[in-house]
Structures are given as structure tokens and as C-alpha cells.
Length: 356
Image 1: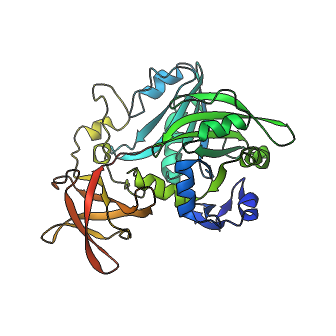
Image 2: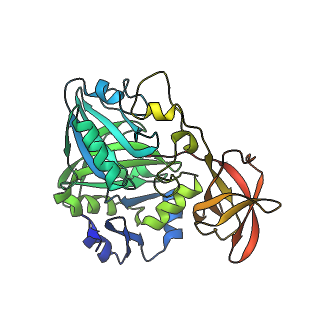
Image 3: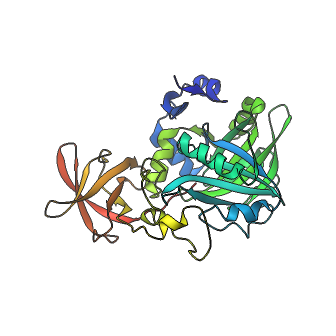
């Protein structure tokens, strides 16, 4: 049975359609539907429940220097007050965990692990880091919401925040509810699917109050997993363990790093070659189902669809596909796949790479 997050009662009061996502019960959509939530995010601001995000405090002498020897992207220059997305590879060079790391103090960091990470990879991350630094999980006490959209900063300011962080930085902010009670949150700035976004991390005991402090602001609407999926697919953002398969190398996901430095998984990575790549394909109104074969004109199979959705802002369906690395696809070129029993042509919109 799926676990209930900090905001479960709120979602049910708002008549959300709840579905399991990993170990958690999350809202798929609210009464207005996913399309309306998608459009509202593009035109206003939406609140997303990030239950399932695992949070860790990492501390110890020379913490950043030691982490830099593990992470795929160098983090040596991450200063206090800044944040970045990073990756930890498995020993075989494949993508294991994707996370956001914030430098809170000189030797104190906060790490937010993507909720799509497999438990075994999360456990391996903890084991790897605990061998060199102190790591403490905060997930049982810390709630996480994401506010995203074109009016994200306006909404947070109206809710009481004096300093809304920009992309790649974090701030301590204070939100106020209708009774003028205040609640402190760690706010982390991102660019999510082409929109300003801020992750809010706070004491789970204040979940209802913080949600209410946001929901009371005119122009804010709740949004569910359906809208999140269509927003990320519309923007060509592959998801870990959906589009980024467990056996994929970072170069197959459009990721590259400085190979002159040492990091976990480098030895295996230096001998591996990209056999696949992830592309974004634009169809008509209906997406192809995951697992659908993708072909070049002439019935030549080159890959499969990994995820897809109707994307309201694009006015079309889009699908992420895993195709052969040698597949001659450039933006604008055509591929074919089957949708509702009919072969349709789609136009390649670009090559994709992930966010945390």
C-alpha cells in the first residue's frame, strides 16, 4: 500500500485523484484536470507536492573537496548560498542518482535526492558518502513543495518572502499564513521545464500551514503528477528510471564532464561508448505509448518511446524516445511510430538531457 505524505489530507480535501508513484500516494490531477494545471503553470504559478524526495544533511571537514571526488560534475567552486544539480554514477559508469546539493555553511551541505531514484541507488549513495563524511537523513521530518511557473517569484513575495532565490542559489525565507503566523523555509531556486521554480523545504509539522500560506495567494493553483509530466516532456526533460534506464551511461543522456578529474565511476566510463541517445519527438494530438517502436521512414527500427504526453503549450503530443546512437536524427528530421493502431510521422524537436 502506498505511503501517505505530509500533504495527503490536503489533496483529498481538494478532491485530487490520488495514484501511487513509487512508494508514495500522490495527486495525479485535481478537478480542473491536468491540461488546465499545465497551462496555469505556464501562465501563473502552481504548487507541486514533492513527497518522496529524500533529504540529507552532509557535514565534515573538507566536505566539498571530498564530495568533489565522487560527483560527476565538479562541485569545488560551489560557494555558501549556492546550489547545483549533480549526479553520482554507479561503479559501472551508469547513472545512479540525480540530486540537488546546497552549500549551507563552509562544511555543511543539504542534498535533495530525486524521488525517481531507486531505493537501492539511494542507499548506495548514503553508503558511499558515509565512508568519508557524516550523513544524516532528514526525510521523515522535512516536507518539500515546489512552486513553479511564470509568476513564481510574485507569489512567494506575496506570501511573505523578502528574498526569493534565483536559479542556482538558496535562501532562508519566511512565509505568512492568514493569521500572520510565520514559517521558515529553505528555498532553492531552479529552472524547471523552462519556468522559474523554487523548492521549499520545511518542518513537516507545519505542512498544512505552509501549504495554506501559498494557496491563499491569488493566482496559485495546486498541480499534480499529470501536469508535471506534460511540462517536463514538453520541454524534453528525461526522467530517471523512465527515460534514463538503469544501464545508461551519462553520455547517452546528453551529459559530459571534465574527464581530467577523478570521480566515482570514471574508470568504467572512460572505456564505455554511447550506444543510444534520448530524443524528443513531436507528434500530432496523441502520444505514442511507452514501448512503441520508433522507425526511420522505410520501416527501419531505431528505438522505442520511453514516455509521452499531450503538451498543451506546444499544441501537440510529444514523446521522449531512446534511439540508436548512430540514428541519423537532427532537429526537423522525421521518424515514424504507431499511435492508436495507425503509423504516424513525427518531427524530431531535439536531443534531451536531464534535470534533478
